[in-house]
Picture 1: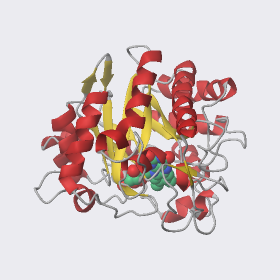
Picture 2: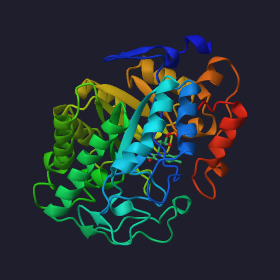
Picture 3: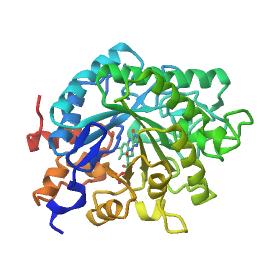
Length: 373
Ligand SMILES: Cc1cc2nc3c(=O)[nH]c(=O)nc-3n(C[C@H](O)[C@H](O)[C@H](O)COP(=O)(O)O)c2cc1C
């Protein structure tokens, strides 16, 4: 296929935004902020290089949302103080100057924190698996404490305050991280949420905390500010997790998403095995269902650097935009290289070892001469 005519390079009009292509950088935690969670100059070089490299939108790594229990990793950026917002401002400015939209991901790690000794979750259920060494974790996850209604109120306020700080930093929008097994996904997942109050039980109850957060963020944001949600079945500590009820559960959750009316829905497939891990027995995918049911802009994810798969996603209406993770961190100029027929630098697991910091990516950025300041 001639890449210039590939559907990933078709422009996309989204509200007042004209995206030059369908290529978004997937959120990737890079544990490179200061110990106090401030974004750095190095991070400005990192994020803006994706824009210079041809991506039309960038979703940041997950920002923690409150100082109480949300933090996932040491050196994770946060959006809990005016200083955090100020530290993101130059990152946002440089990225926009290079021609891309930039969205802040808001994340509460819940029971999957690599950082907190005492974690909070909807229910006191110990996560399976071990913590992640590249993010500073060692050993098994602790038993979380079941959240009180007051804890839930604090967590919700954290998301809303963080969204306001994202507005102040100049971001084009936020993405609520309700995927990959973190707090909001813990609420959604029946096996991890055995509450018998208004936040547990029915799908409507398990979605309630997300609906309340979206509503509250809407009420404090300007109309142009994009509010999105990221969902997945798989979890970082259980990549092959699927809902027991398959497509039926997807439909129930997506009906709730439709009512909450975010601007976009991002369907993550962390394993990168999009066909294997996001299709249902009736032949439809989670992303396609999201598109049909919500009618919103859908971002598909999971090995989307594979051009045949990417073409199928767009041509068969699974998604409008594609987010690319590992292939982007390996080569921040992946779009430009693909467009001009230069093989992009391939991802290698050593790029995230021994720590998942941006050091390696920034070395590549320098060699590509993509640092614009
Ligand atoms: C280093 C790294 C960090 C990640 N951090 C996050 C994160 O902060 N938030 C999130 O939603 N997903 C995170 N992910 C998952 C990616 O967004 C994406 O779903 C996954 O890499 C699959 O896409 P890919 O096949 O294009 O790599 C991370 C992935 C990687 C490789």
